[in-house]
Length: 287
Image (cartoon, rainbow, N blue to C red; front, side, top):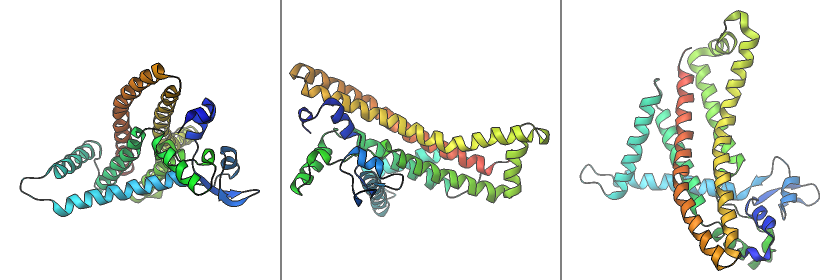
């Protein structure tokens, strides 16, 4: 995208705005043409780009590992099978180290979360202008104003995505807590721990805050790290429009940040997976 057609603030705002579809108070059901219109659509608006990339990457993950499973051999494995087996063994080791219960869902859940979150995070290494520029060209060909075409490509920089995954994990944790301990046992842990029955009000406050903080921290940790990383890439990209010297310096910075960001991408996927395993272990454990 030619940042010289926009001010720095407009360029940053454009790259951090989702392609949004929703019910606008004045225009009815439509795509938002500005960030203000997207905001006015309210809570029930859909971020089309986040939905597209998260679903597409989930389908790619399923297709890839299904392909490996179909051609898996007990003989000398190929490179893709080696990679898949390494991932599976890594997940299995993580589950055995953090989960002490018996639930056949936990390992596939951890595997899916790690691979899916990693793939969504990996989109952060795509140069920030490539896909938004392609979207602008398509929009212009369809008669839209290119500056009103938004296309974010990193789903985990959208809090709707991270909270959606965190709430799914949270509801699984609640379901298995009640299933394994009974409603009375689960509520008893909230009411009588850690100070016994005489400290019930304090117990409920402490345990309630601890319970609610789990999905909030799970979602915000992933969102915050990925959003900050994407913002840094965008700020570095601004340097390319400030002359060749700043462009060369920006290229060096971008390469260095991309290499470092590989660690962040992997670490955030690992943390989300590990906390999911820990929360599921808590749901299967008695106080």
